[in-house]
Amino acid sequence: MDEYKAKAPQAKASPADMEQQRQAQRRVAWLNREFERLSGRRKKAYILTFGCQQNEADSERIAGMCEQMGYEMTNDPQSPDLVVVNTCAIREHAEKKALSQIGGFKHLKENDPGVMIAVCGCMVAQEHRAEQIKHSYPYVDLVFSTGSIHLFPSLLLEKIEHGKRQFRTEPDAYGLAEGMPVRRESTYKAWVSIMYGCNNFCTYCIVPYVRGRERSRKMEEVVREVEELVRDGYRDITLLGQNVNSYGQRDGFGYDFADLVEQIDRIGGDFRLRFMTSHPKDASDKLIDVMARSSHVCHQFHLPLQSGSDRILRAMNRHYDWARYEHVVNYLRQKMPDVTLSTDIIVGFPGETEEDFEQTLRALEQVRYDLVFSFIYSPRRGTPAAKMEEQIPPDVQGARFRRLLEVQNAISLAANEAQVGQTLRVLCEGPSHSDPDVYSGRTEGNKLVLISGRGPEEGTFGTVRITRADPYSLFGEWEG
Ligand code: 5AD
Ligand code: SF4
Image 1 (cartoon, rainbow, N blue to C red):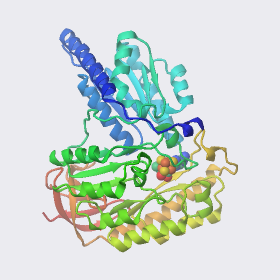
Image 2 (cartoon, rainbow, N blue to C red):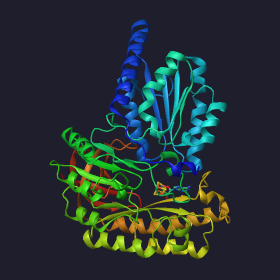
Image 3 (cartoon, rainbow, N blue to C red):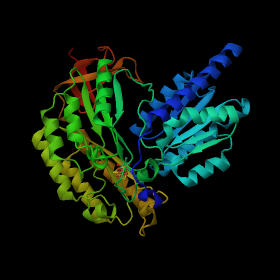
Image 4 (spheres, rainbow, N blue to C red):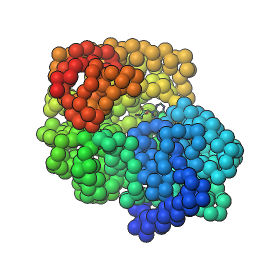
């Protein structure tokens, strides 16, 4: 996989490339209209998404292209004419789930050979997985990686017209594409990708191999997209990147992430701005200063620690130590005492001793995060950590994982209980899935609040008095 490291950052997909895709879109749309004229039925597309917010954002682009190609989007996996499985490769479990779902779509093709099955995303950018799909899943028609998403219409058209299976699985062969259509899942919450790929090569992580080298969108493009979203009534906007703090650094823009946030903050309107993910080595005091004086940026920060042990952080190639991390947390709290903090932790990284693990527990006790996403280390083929000696046995990993959850649950509960009695502004999300009489909303810190009784309309702001808390959510009553 080392050959990927040598690659230079890619050029943008040119306007001519994008025009070619629009032509393919129009051609598929024409074919689909013909189908509808003859059969009296409109073709349907179903997208199944695994993994992170980047993947969700990518799926919204794929859905946008599907709509332009005349498909009606459906949530019903039983009878679509086009299936797209957007996969994740971050841990083995994610890959297993995706492969089993892809296997489950075989019968669709058996019932109707006209059904098209596409697999995209991080999993298929690994050579061995692309080969596996090629040989063991012969009913899959198209395979494309995250860097080739904008080629979806031409790949689909090629398969429809010439019958040849299409594979475009280079992680970042086509750089950055502007101007793809988008069909957003929500009418009030939106993802905005500001950059793609990652250059950090943390030793456990597959992302740099499957999403390719870091490349950033220009500030003017990002600002324009956010302006349009605010104009369209979006109230909660999250800027996405694997390492937002290094935004623009590789592209020689002459401005950085803090400048981008400051610029977006100038947009008028009632909206919340968030971003993720920050890397502790690059999260700057300048960014924190911009956040603290902004009017739209939520006082919320996701800062993956991964481990509290300097020795393990070095083995992970994280380029910071606990002292540096602590500085960022202290500065955040100094400038925004009400900041909500969350983190990612990997348990059972190769070589992790009991003492290393206890340092992680001590870090959790010291920072007192509101929320921790913890993961058992999962070896990823081709990454340096997968080849390290001293892999930790699963029973030790499991026992440490449970201890960590126990420690953190008590901390999360205390953090949430500290909000009881407060009156908070929430963005309303309508009735909850489990109980139509219970409404939900999100605080500025992105905490879930469950509120009994009908509240303001979904996508508008309301006021809630917090009455109770558990480790995962707050409970409250409407005040307005
Ligand atoms: N095993 C377990 N967790 C991982 N993560 C990334 N790679 C792995 C892996 N191989 C976690 C990190 C990262 C989060 C998105 O997923 O904590 O921050
Ligand atoms: Fe993976 Fe590290 Fe890049 Fe995050 S910063 S995507 S953990 S390599």
